[in-house]
Image (cartoon, rainbow, N blue to C red):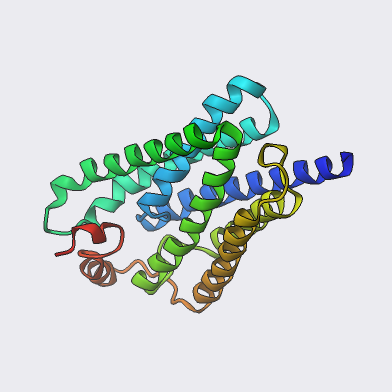
Length: 240
């Protein structure tokens, strides 16, 4: 039992450090390339999860290792949110218009808080946070691929992000799907399957990223990218 607990602590540390590395790099390349490195739905889900985790788990456990790691994540989340609000508006579709960019972005964040809260109310704090962590990680894997295939180049993306994403997925999958947690009554087959799929798509993302063209800061290329993304990506819900 003690050995299992040690492994769980190491996996929590690995997952936490992977998340910190991912968001720190996302903030760096986003500011460097004047673009957003993480899709808005992922930002909303991760930010709301981190805030809820810090408030609820912090109240129970105090300044524990997971709480401190997530607190650092929140600071990085805020920087990533800044890159979204700073550079994301240029990709908003002409219909309904850029005036909807901020309301739409805020709605995404509010919806993310509502979804996380609903899962926690249904399953409890620890199980709810575990389920939502793995599910949003899977969503992140899919949206990273979608973002890369749409841009067709490495703008605001890097291999550090991709590898950190994979290591985080592995940590979550082993923690909840193999070792199990007391709050989940042991290993969860559902989280094992979802986590394994996340790892698969993370490997696909790494392969695609390794073949993607490097991003060059040329005015002409930037205008082309903006035009290509004007009616796609994060705002597909507005397509006619």
